[in-house]
Amino acid sequence: MTRARIILAATAALLTAGLSACNEEGSTGASGGTAIDNPAPETTQSQATEESEPATSETGNPSETGAETSTPAPDEPPSVQLCKVADLAVTVQYVDSAAGTVHQALRFTNSGNRTCEIQGFPGVSYVGGEDGHQIGKPAGRSGSKGPAVPLAPGAQAWAPLAAPRPENYDEATCQPQEARGLRVYPPQEYDSVFVPLTITACSNTDAPGNFLTVRTIQQGTPS
Image 1: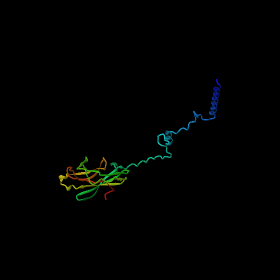
Image 2: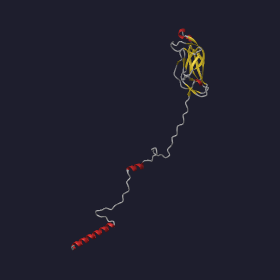
Image 3: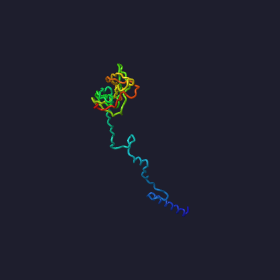
């Protein structure tokens, strides 16, 4: 080895030692990089969404602190029931006569122990014979249906009943028969009650008009 090569080798060795010493003291090398700690993890969008949403209950509804509990509505009182035949005592009362027509009142008295309600037109017809067969046509209705009438125990309501006198007609048109009474159906009821009444009634079902006319139930008694 020549002198020049020995000097170059020694110089190279010295430079290498110097660089190593610098790296050990924390200096930055020209071609390398110092490892750094990883930065704090970024908050992902899904995490941010989870943190911003309110907590939910097991059913999926947002939790509410102090939420009021709905109180159920109290049971409604039962409505007043319709008056049935078993609730009523039915009688007929003479009112007056005018212009050849007899005016009577069908009186309905609550004979039960509960309040009931009656409304509308009663069904009325003459009946005769031992078998209670119907005489003539049932009563026609006059006027409009009135309001409901509450009947407390012992209270009364009535319906006006009008019957032209048979002598107003010739015998062929009227075909008179003796009636034993009235068959009365309280409004909106399928059962009837027999009301005794001795009267001559027209029986011709083919005659025009009505031989008996009833109006709607009214509160109280006829004045």
